[in-house]
Every structure is written in C-alpha cells, then in structure tokens.
Image (cartoon, rainbow, N blue to C red; front, side):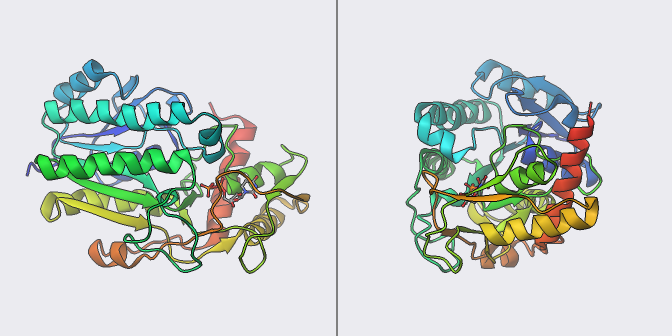
Length: 339
Ligand code: UDP
C-alpha cells in the first residue's frame, strides 16, 4: 500500500460542507488535497489558494482520470452528491443519476487510474429508523426515501468492487452533521439548506419568520423526531483516521458516525434559542407545529461502538451548544457577507 505522504487525496465535493471540512483537516495534519466540485452547492472560496481545484462533475471520466494521473492521487474521499431528503422524494431520478450513476463513473476512473483507497460519504438514512434504540452497522437496512436508497445502492456497488479488486473501501454512515469550523474557515453554505440547525440559525437571525416543526405525533418522548447530531469537525477527523485504517488493516469497513445520543427537534430548537440569546441577545424564534415531512424516520441514533473501538476516535465537540454556536457564528458571517 502506497504511503499517502506525497500523494494528495482527491476530494470530490471538497467545496461543499463536509468535504471542505475534511479538506481542512487534511491540510491541518500536513497532508495534501486536490478538489473537484461542480459548485452546484459548494463555494469556490472554501478551497484555499494552493489547493488545486477543478470545477467539474464526478461523472466526467476523462477529467477525473486526468486529475488522478496529473497529481498522482492514490486515495479518494467522495463527498459529491445530492443530499436533501424531501427533494429526493420529489426528484428521485436526479438522485439516482447524481449519486449512483455519478459514483459508478467516478469508480471507473478510480479503478483505471490506480486509486487504492476510497472513503465514501454514506448516511444513517440507509437504516429503517423504526426502532428507538441506537442502531449498529448491522441494523436493518431499509431506507425511507430515495436519498437513502441512492446511498445504499452505492454502498453495495462499493462492497462488490472491494471484493473483486484491490480497492480498499471505507463507508462512513453519517448521522446528522452540524456546526462549522471553529476558526470560521468553512460552514454550511447553501442558502436554501433545509437542515434543522442551519434553518434554526437563519430563523433566529431574522431570515425566516418562523421555524416549522415537521410532525409532533411521532412515537418519541416529545413527539418530534430524534436525531444524533455530530459536529462536522469531529466527522472530518474520522475521515483521516479511517483513511489510515484502510491503508494499514481493513479492506472494507462500514462505520456509523454519530455520538450515540439523540435529541428531539424541540430540544435542538431550545438549544439554538439559548445560544442565540447568549451570543447575539436574540429573541427566541417563533415556532409552528406542522404536518410530518415526507420520508422522515422517527428516530435515528448511532451505536458508536465500532468507530470508537476501531479508530480510537475521540470526538471533541460532543455538545449541541457548541454545534449551535459554531453554526450560528458561521451563519452570521454569511449574512454579513463572506467573499
Ligand atoms: N426539521 C424540522 N423543521 C425544519 C427542518 C427539519 O422540523 O425546518 C426536522 C426534520 O423533520 C427531521 C429533523 O428536523 O425530523 C432533522 O432534519 P434535517 O433535515 O436536519 O436532517 P435529516 O435527518 O432529514 O437528514
């Protein structure tokens, strides 16, 4: 297995939310990165000068092949993809095209050009989300929406490829990623983001009149959905650790990425209110209880035994208030004008 010391890691979606944090983690650890991103939701400014950047699609075989060869990449972290659950319900074919067909094309270019390690952004949405216990990697796979199915199909493709070739693969199943870089270098950029913490931060900053709570009749303690929120910088660190792990030990590994405890929508909004009150003297947001959102599972909380044991992963930001504070600081920065 080639040491990655002099081989930059190719990051697809490196101008996006999670990809840019993984890129920063690589750079902070003295590694090199090359980014390809179609800028559909990413931000060019998220990629620092000095990091080679290519605007393009993962499905562009010739482009990806050329980048890998020119930079001598041996590893890929694959973040590029469509990620919004309700949108996937409305536009399923776009999700299968972008996430499944796009990944297949990317993998073709990887296999043809000497890539040895591949880390894939998967999701907790591959689980059925029916139980109220933390779910392990062996939990029931029954995605509730096209987004989750597109990720699971890609996982299956990767498992088969890992079995048939020398490619070593890590599949990371993210729970709910939140927060922003502590130094303010990156954060969730897409203005139309639908995710709970970002949306709540925009609301306390006055960008939306109120916060809609999607369903309060779930079989959960307060009736709203439970999720396991993980800080994006802890998640980024897990990518570095798993890249080394598959280089040294495993050929194929799947890991949950969460902290192992769930918070309800109401609890999250309470924390954002509290943090916004302290940081900005903001009024509590207005809330409106509405119907369930299509494709939502009641509860998704990670069993984190595997990642903690295998990677000796020790998260630093396991605190909803830290996630809310960094997300809010980033959102304020966006509002004040970034570029
Ligand atoms: N949610 C909500 N109002 C919003 C956005 C999200 O009530 O404006 C709820 C959503 O129904 C889900 C939880 O917050 O139960 C987390 O949703 P998000 O879109 O952040 O992530 P997902 O779990 O869908 O990946």
